[in-house]
Length: 231
Image (cartoon, rainbow, N blue to C red):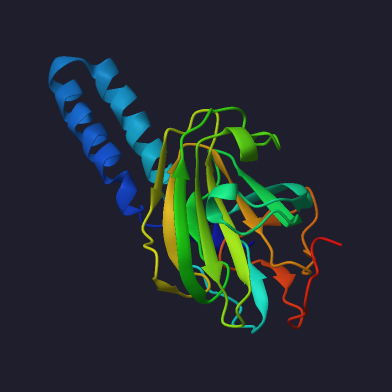
């Protein structure tokens, strides 16, 4: 990444979910200027952190047909077969799951992996264990989304709260037509996003790889076949 690109990333406009935090920080800063300078400095630091955390840069999908894009920025912490969340009704057959961990330094805006239609959205309360651990996928608070691809196969994207995350935001509704790379939500503060691939499709991603949401190709869709699973 060039120096110019780095500046553009850091200075990207904030996501709308950050507006209350920014407004509160600015208000506290102004109050601090009158009452106590230490409060003003603290409020300024909080405001700058909020600007950085909620940054929402533009992303350019590769425009390549038949691929799945990363649904989030961050580091791949798990690539393994797993059964999709039962609340989505996608069946008990394991399929490949790619888990992406988002630290507080990553862009937290989630993006659609491929064109399709939202068939189900299911929110579940849960714990707040470290999102880099695989057990977070099963135990933590989560918002699971099933998307039917144009060829009829389905994928699942799961927004998972992390150790300090306490709010999952999703702008989608069941029945929505969605497009690859489009924004669909955000998680505050530190989280994980899992992508369950269609049965029979293997991921290109490996553990430790860095993802760029809406741009990194995570898997290539194979022709539709019967059966499949995670083999």
